[in-house]
Structures are given as structure tokens and as C-alpha cells.
Length: 556
Image (cartoon, rainbow, N blue to C red; front, top):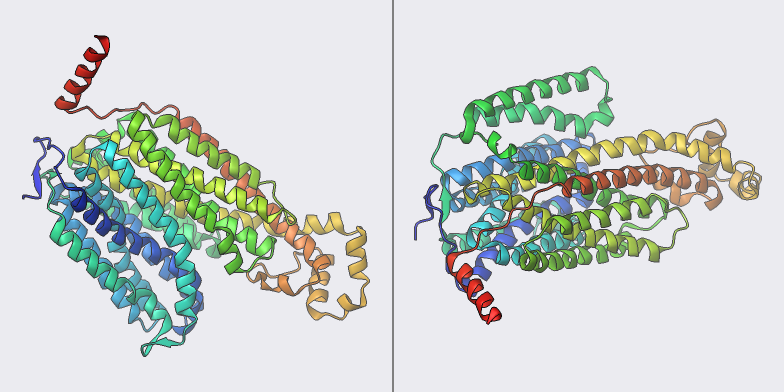
């Protein structure tokens, strides 16, 4: 069976057995799981990796290398899959990811790791975006949304297993004669090879193929526009947002953006991001909602564990277990939204509902503190998971339904692209905001509590006075500073609770400010989502005749 058909021959959805669909979807899910796990597994292992490669101060570059190439390649994969066909591009993406993984496992320095992570990201950018386009080629919307929910579940499982597996490998000196942390990358090889076999043998579907020029200048200008901005987002806190280097990169990014717009306008329908798609108000608004939702979703998943571990003093393991219901709730939300959207063919209010649940959860999280019950925190995590599952499932349906099938690759690529941009920029900016205001909040908290009986008793307690750690913090607070090095908050666990309390409350207050801002952004996304004009998938002729017959029978 040919893999692609001409763009002007709108193909029918293929008649596939349930077994074939299940096997192909399983192969797609394995690749997406591999990509999602890679991001989560590094979170707990990066410190060990950096120590082993003698590059602790360079570790951010390994993260940045992956994020930049993965984010930049997302729209390119979508466009190229429309031109050359899904199967070919998907297997290229898997192969690049596996090559990058193998090279990462052989790294001898942080510079090598950063370079190899970039190669890995070139493949990782296509694993999710092309998989979603494949699913859209394979199944009509009413069936597609049921399977799309599984993609959300994959991210939930990866978010739970990733940190645990990363900690397990990083904590092992060696396994089968190889350093433990190198298995973080080697574990991708068997998963990827299985995926290649499944996709190579079973994926024989027809997809809309659009013969046209490749927009290389558009890709180049997009790199020049986004790479400097992503570098500032990752490193701006260290460099200083107004430093000469940051300002230079901002200017370069702005120049690249102008060039990109000019190139895309000139390329027309052959552009990497065809301007005509953005003249479609529904498509543009869905991408705006996806970008804002990405800011909230991924920033909150950074700050909720931060609150649990720093402010409430939970261990990483305990915090991870407390957030396990959130991952389950994300799956449940996606599973719930899929059939509802398939049955009603209405997604606008479901999208607004998921965003509303997220926004309300963020606003409630802006009020929690040191003494908030863990039961309440767990309930809020579940609510956030449900809203996230509904949002991620429905926004994908909205995006795919807003474009013709011949642009499905571009649309699916932009789904991941706009969300990832929101995730990167939101997390970087809000981390900078949080630590930027934390010192002042700690000083204010200490000033308010200075005359309280608890703190006065601690100041006068001989046991506190004899503790070097407690005395150092108290001296700093009394001198009008935050009292601790905010780059290393592990000392909080060794302090007298009365001394640590003002610091915890100050840090908690700064995190609350982030959640308040996320809640406001979420409500903005709700308003934008309500303005989206829904597009219903046209029914096949036999479906229309069946419905007409049913209406006639009912009338008789």
C-alpha cells in the first residue's frame, strides 16, 4: 500500500483491524514514552552526571542543548511529514534519538554531553508531533480522541517513573560494568529498536502528501529567532536579564523574528508555518490557548514539588508519592474528555472547563502555607491533574479540527511547539521571579515574627546560640538579609524549627505569588478559548444517509 496520496485527493480513512490499530498505536506510544521519560529521568540524575563529568557549573547547557533542538525541530517535522510522508520522517526521528542516546552514554565531558543531547533533541522533537499526525491520518475524530487520551497517560506515567528510575541509575556505581548514570541513555536503545520494528512493519497507511519546496530559509530564520531567546530564558537568571549579553540576544532574536515573518510571507503555502493558517482565527486562538496553558501546566509541575519539598519539608520520595494521584488524575481527565468530545463533537466548553479547573486550582494554591494539610495538598494535586488531562486532550482535538487534513502534520507539530515554548519560557521566567522576590519576602516575614514569643524564645535559647548553623542564619536575618544561600536550601532541614519558620514562610509566599500569576494567566486562556469557533468534521455520505434514515424512522 502506498504511504501517501496527492494533496488534492482527500483520502478516506483506512479500514484497519482493531489489532492493527492497537499495534501501531502501541509503537507510537513507546516512542512518545521514550521521549517523555528522557526529560523526567534527567531531573534527578543531572547532578550525578555533572559530578562524573567534572562540569557541575556547565550542567545547564546539557538541558538547554536538548530543549533548543527539540523545540526548534517540532514545526519542521510537521511540515516535512506533510511533504515526504509520516513514516519516513518518524523513523528518521527515532533513529536520531537513538543515535543521540548512544552518543550521550559515551560522553567524556559536559561539552560532549551538551552536543550529543542536541542530536538527541533533533530526534525527540519529532517523536510526539509526528505520532499525533499519524494518529490523525489513521482514525476519524470520533475514534481518534479515544486513543489520544493514551498519549496524556504516557506523560503521566513518565512523570512518575522518570525521577525514580533516574535516581536508581544515578545512585548505582555501575551496572554490567558500565557506570550507572550512562544507563539513563542506554535504556532508550531497546525501546527505540522495538518501536522501529513495529512502525516499519505495520505502518502502511496513506497520508496526504503535499509536494512542494522545503522552507530551509524559514527554518534558518526561526532558529535565529528562537535560539537566542531560549538561551536567555535558560541562562538569564545567571547572566542578568538586563546584562549586555542578554540584551544582545534579545535583539538578535527580534531580528530573527522579523526575518522569519518576511520569509514565511514570501513562501506562502510552502512556508514552514503557512501564514494562511494563522489567518484562520480558530487555529490562531487555539495556539494562543495552548501556549498559555503550557506556561501554567509545566510551571505548576515545577513549583508544586518545590513547595512540598522546601516549604513543607517533604523528602523527594515522599513528595513524588504525594503527586502520584496527580498523574493518575491526568489520565482520568484525558480518558473522560475523549469520549465526551467524540460523542458531542463539541470541544470549546470542554476546553474552557479544563482550563477553569486548572486556574481555580492555581488560585487556591496561592493561599497554601507551611501548615497546610497534606490531605489538602493531595486534593489540589488531583484537581490540577484532572484539569490538565482535560485541557491537553481537548486542545489537541481543537487544533486538529481547525485545519484541513493536508495540514495535519503542521498542526500536530505546532501543538507540541507552542506548548513547549510556553513550558520553557514560563518555567524559566517564573523561577527567576520567585527567587528574585524570595529574599525580600523572607526579610519581611522575619520582621513580622521578630517580636513573637516563639522567635524571641529561639533567639534567647542557649541550644540555638550554640548551634553554628542556627546562629549564622539568625545573624543574617538580624542584619536584614535572607539568612541563607538560596542556591542551597538543604540547610533548612538542620535548623531549629523556630528559626527556619520565617524563611519557610517567605519562600512559601514567593511561590504563592507564582501560583497567583498562573491563575490569572489561566483565566485569560479561558476567555480566549470561549471565542474559538468550533469546526465539526464533515460526515461521510453513508453516515449522513444512516442519520437521515433514523430521522425518517423516528418521524414515522
